[in-house]
Length: 268
Image (tube, rainbow, N blue to C red):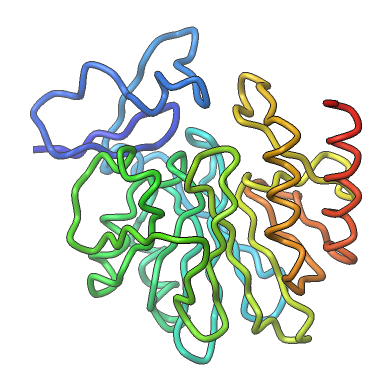
């Protein structure tokens, strides 16, 4: 039986003869069902029509993104560390070329995802690379639509998944909204992989915070202040966001601090 993927968000569902009647992820206010209606594809159809493009951003940090654009069109990142590689966030397409490239880069030691919109096919990625653990925050457990023994629902506000890679729960967009702090970046300055929990803006000297991005529903000031407080102890000079070109390449911590202050001024 095929594994169906939601065409609007990329979420995968347990194998079945027919697709689900609806996608709960898209029915939620933080996502949306397109005006054309709910659509479905399969892993096989997606692999036949799309491919993944790769980019090297800095030593040991690659992004991969499906072309032409599919679903939300986020990018995933492969972070290479001395203790193994991490796939940060996930994309629905896992084709033969991608498997070969990841293996050539050293495989995977762990997978971690910022929030439910990017869970996509984490189950398949884990299986392809030796059933590596998939770290999802327990606060968002209800949005994992395909069971997998590889999924580790972690709790609390931080988790070291490798010596140089720490998950930080910020909440906001989702209760378990998470960023990855990569302490082992080559220059020692620190990197934040933010998904859209901390959204890099069109002006990359700014970041912002919303409860629903497609429906433009804001977070309350207290939530944004709390996010700023959680990030304050971390050392990071660069931020890589969920979408192509959304990178803060210098002075990223100051960018976050200024953006938090300005957001609170405006929404208050």
